[in-house]
Image (cartoon, rainbow, N blue to C red):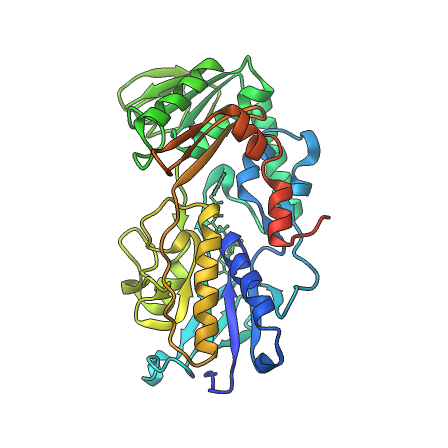
Length: 388
Ligand SMILES: Cc1cc2nc3c(=O)[nH]c(=O)nc-3n(C[C@H](O)[C@H](O)[C@H](O)COP(=O)(O)OP(=O)(O)OC[C@H]3O[C@@H](n4cnc5c(N)ncnc54)[C@H](O)[C@@H]3O)c2cc1C
């Protein structure tokens, strides 16, 4: 089935921070009568929103039944136009084979869902995010995620000595959460570099976070790696041969761009070597003017963060409206300020904002904005999400 010029579906794949923000930005704008022939469709594998920044505490403790808050139902009715469909897109069929993909006003394609359903698109937004393994590999039902969280809560509760492989944001925040609940458990972070995080952030701040971790008795093993997480005789061995006593080793390193679908559908040349989607400054996918990409999957040189997704979404929403109005998509993404807020449990943390001379803020700030409530209410309000 090929799309026709009468098809006016704007289809978004993925309802994480970026996909949902794009949907929310477009929904009221497409409400006026002049857009009656245009539909807005958000397709999501998971029938609820997952507030990933709060998931580490959810995995560590059953206190507060965080799964009830971290997983948020989508609104029953959007503020403007649009519908949210649960399903997984398994294939995208661009109309490029007909040779007129370059026509910016009429040509789209179709997406195929797991159950075989086909949905034509006039304009497509890719927002498929990151795939994680292990602890952060969440299933698509609330029951399965709750079960998964219960298993990890038990592992953390039973372990006496925990080794976290990787000293990025996930490893550092996880160490803080564990220490908050069990100050007497031994927690060690093994990190490849001599400083935590990436060098996007200044050394001064990276050292300040290391100092905060030492204050709560987190051990740091720097310039070393855990290549094999297996425990032998109550110990794990690092690449340099250091043996650390432990009964639980948790890999915390990065996820992978969830872009296999994009490569399979649009060709491997659509992706960078790192598996990110090559985009123009307008966030149009290179050589595919009616396809946009947002969120973690884009080839923009910036830290992959939920905080960046709002700016991606407004850029793309403006450009999509231009295409719908048969104008040129000319709005460019200008990049976002690098900023990071790292929680170390409920009351501690550190922030770096790359503004002015580079602003470092301490526990009082991070506690107020993030650590205490994990930005749950803020996200619910900002994204128009519901409660169970
Ligand atoms: C533990 C943790 C803590 C974090 N803390 C912070 C923080 O404090 N601040 C911050 O700014 N960022 C933080 N991040 C990063 C942030 O969560 C990501 O940058 C953000 O989720 C990216 O949004 P996204 O929409 O691109 O992808 P995602 O949020 O990953 O959403 C992608 C969605 O697409 C859906 N999907 C994928 N493929 C398909 C398909 N084929 N069909 C249908 N649906 C599909 C998935 O189910 C998923 O819901 C954290 C991440 C983690 C893991």
